[in-house]
Image 1 (cartoon, one colour):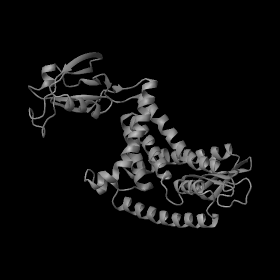
Image 2: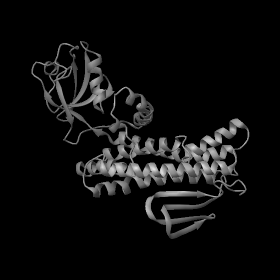
Image 3: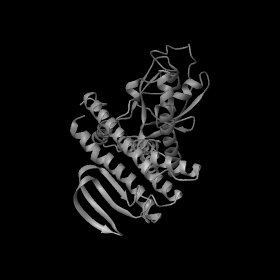
Image 4: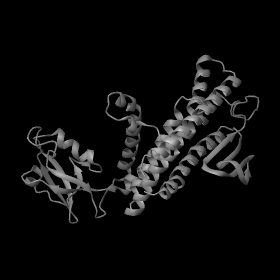
Length: 355
């Protein structure tokens, strides 16, 4: 991957995702009758005033990093139609709307990716004398279903083979444009060399003939929601996985906009080279989930930090002084900027994907 793909990944993937986040805040503010002073494409300084609609300036800015929404009276409750003067419910709605927009976009993109279909997984090798050979499986066979579950990833294929040793597993495979039903009986642990082969004795690879495993609209929707939950649960489990040694600190490290752009660029390159939109759609959905979760963390200056103050107000029955809250967010922003700078340096010196 070249640096040009990383730059392209930034503009193709990251910028629209940030804009979707800001649009969530914008529309929630509008629905709550909170005045928005400016909606900016990119970050200041301002390059051009594009339009003025309903007292909102739509601007184009010089720094091409997503965008921003500037509500009136963000930290000043004396401004009648501002954010700070709005009710707790309205403020909560506006603050949570950015992450919600990212989750909604993630559901849609995952749904679209499932409808289009992931590259099918095919058999690349068959071990002599293995259960696969006895069942009549051949090199080039494509997995379509395993025990009536759509075989759109390796885990769906492998799990029944390990869990049902000695029991029949029904496969629906594609071969030469036809669909065939095959029954294979995986070996139980101890009957094969687990370091060199699996329960049925096949090698797996992505299909190179353009075959896909796609889902219908309803099934794709269910899969989209499940995919988001899997990502969310994985993030929640990361600290425990790190403590238990299941993942390395390198694998669990946070990444900056540079690292995210590298991942997006790699996916964009894979989609372009293989003429396959699935990798690009998958990374778009993943980054939406990651951005949504990150912004909901109860950290000052982030949406989650501001939401925490709203919840504290609801519990206490009175508001924390705006000056104190504002100072907490300022300090939080300075800390976040410092951490962001460190992560950028780390991602340049020790890139996620070497150039």
